Structure formats: C-alpha cells, structure tokens
Image (cartoon, rainbow, N blue to C red; front, side):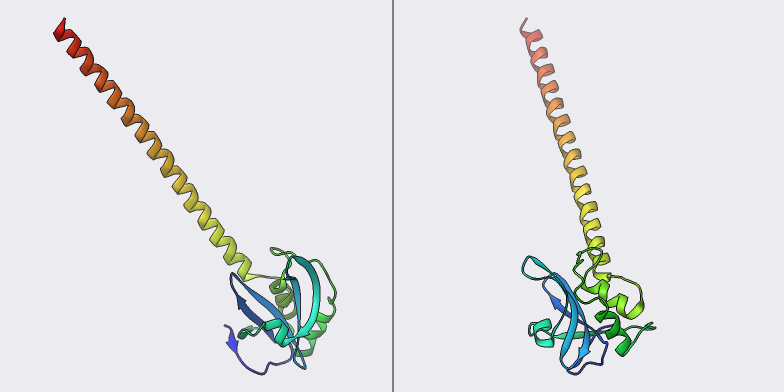
Length: 165
C-alpha cells in the first residue's frame, strides 16, 4: 500500500500519479531518483537515468510503495538500479519503470498497472463485442420486421384485388 512522506529511505520504491498512468523510481539518496525515463521526454525514448526528486515528481505527490517480503533493501536496491544505468530498452508493456523498480526490490519484473490496463482493455473488448452483437441482433430483428410488414401488405393487397375482381 502506497504512503506519502517528505523524507525517503534509501532504496525506497517511489511513485507519482499522472493522468492515465503512474511513474516509478527508486530513491538513491541526496534528493536523487533512479528511474526509467522512457517517454518522459515527450516522444523520444530515453534510458534509465538518475535525476533530482523534483524533476522526477514534477511537483506532484510522491508515494512510497511497500513490500511485505522484499528480496533486496536499501543500498542493494540502489546498486541493482545502478547496474542497469543507461539501459535503453524501455517498452510500455514488458519493460517499463515499474518493471524496473519491482525487479530491483523483488528480483522479479512486474507491473501491476499494466495488468490493470489489460483487464480494462479486455473488459472494453467484451463490452464492444456485446454492443456489436446487440447491433447485429437489432439489425436482424429490424430487417425481419420490415420483411414481415412488406409480406402482410402484399397479402392485404392480394386480398383486396380478389374482392375487386
């Protein structure tokens, strides 16, 4: 569960909420954060970098991600992050800033926000499929009703022609 603080322990997993996503980094001490900047520099992909906490947060609230049983803590986490400095293999789905931070602390790359987004997209896909199916059913019913009206109208016209003859 995330918590907010003004001072951060060395190796803490920090996150900042932005519109539509959460950015993640590891506190490296002395007011600095190591993070995968990814597409933070508009649309140009950038490597893992160390930056000031102010630049990392852009003035937004910083949360600390907690772990029940972290494999690595403190300086070891920072050392692991530094071992990947300048890596430039950012990928939104399989190698983002959250993957990097969870790897540094647990040894396993993971991004719960990617899982949540995939669940949302899957739900939207189901809803879209249902709407499409309902549209198809509505079109089928409308076409059938229209054909039935034309059939009844033809039968009534045929009956009227028989009376006149």
